[in-house]
Each structure stands twice: as structure tokens, then as C-alpha cells.
Image 1 (cartoon, rainbow, N blue to C red):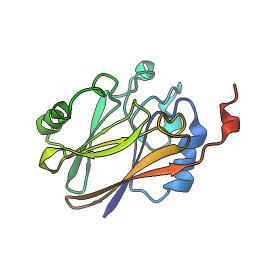
Image 2 (tube, one colour):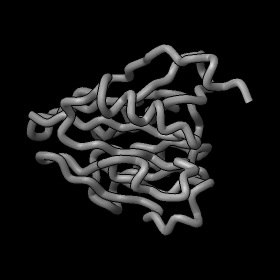
Image 3 (spheres, one colour):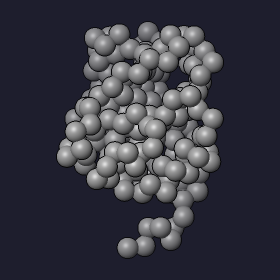
Image 4 (cartoon, rainbow, N blue to C red):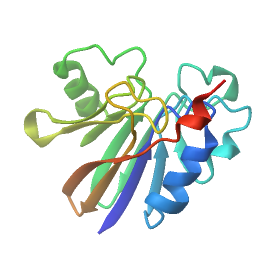
Length: 164
């Protein structure tokens, strides 16, 4: 069994990337960031596999990635051009790319939704700028062969970090 830890939309707040990586989800086997890191250097995302967010065009990151864990293929994208589309579009993306899970950021709203044919849509929300409640969030996937157990995790944010 493998654990995948997925974050998104850290928006120039490495404190929360580090908190998830080194405190909250330190035992994961794979780390993924769904974009909008805002950094000048993607190395600041530690050992996360990162895709380009709508604020990361200057970094030369891939627009999407396919990550294989055990017998599961994960399609990772930031999602600024597709977040509003119907599930049928997500299902087609998964079908074309022979993937089992579509993971997308951008909305800052954590979500897990089952699609048709046993496929899965997940959004980890945002580690620092949530739109659904005032807590950071990240996603874990427990993968054992083809079996997938997704879970959204929430953690408190430090309001003093948001005073500009």
C-alpha cells in the first residue's frame, strides 16, 4: 500500500507546504502539488511533483502530469480552464489518458466526487487560501493495487501570516 499526499494553491506561502510535508503528512510515498505555487523557483516545493498553475506560467512547469502509483494512474492538472465543466468532460479526460483519478486544484474548495465507471475526481482545496472554510486542506490517497481510499484533511491556519 502507498500513500499519496496532494496539495494545491500554496500562493507564495511555503510555511504551509512545509507544514504538510514535514508535520501533517510526513510518511507519504508520493507528494503532488496541483499548482499556483507563485515561487520564483519550483525547488521551494521540496520533493513535490508540481504542475503549472495559472500564476506559474513563468516557471516552465508541465501543464499536467500522469502519476502512476501501484496499479492506479492519476491525472494531475491545475484546472483553471476546466474546473467549471461537466463530469462528462472529466470522464473523457480520464478515458483518453487511461487514468483512474483526476486531481485538480484552482478552486480552493476541497472535494471528493465519484464519477461513472468507478473513476474519481478530487480537489485538495488550498493549503492557505481556502474558499470553503477557514482551514487549510490537503488530500491523501491510500492506494493498494487498484483500491483507492481518498481523504480530505483539514488543519488550522495562523491568521498572523495573512496580515499584509
